[in-house]
Image (spheres, rainbow, N blue to C red):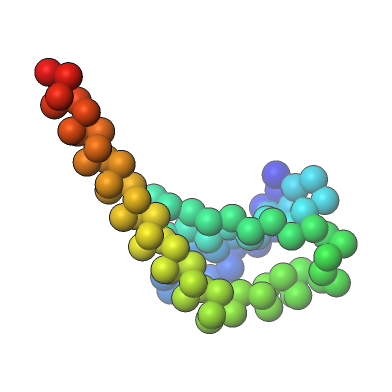
Length: 87
């Protein structure tokens, strides 16, 4: 996997990679990440991929990050409950 570009953003770490004839757009927030894969033949240029980073997409990513964190916290609580029941 080859890093093509770090895309500056005030909230997220955004990186664009190339791997197996696909562009991979990785968006990170804290310990969570979301990756979007786009076939090289599905876009005309790298700029077209970067143009897909709309405010709406990033807003939806934030909603998913919040949901991911809630799911993880629930899983962590369940782990603690399981461990306390085993003791």
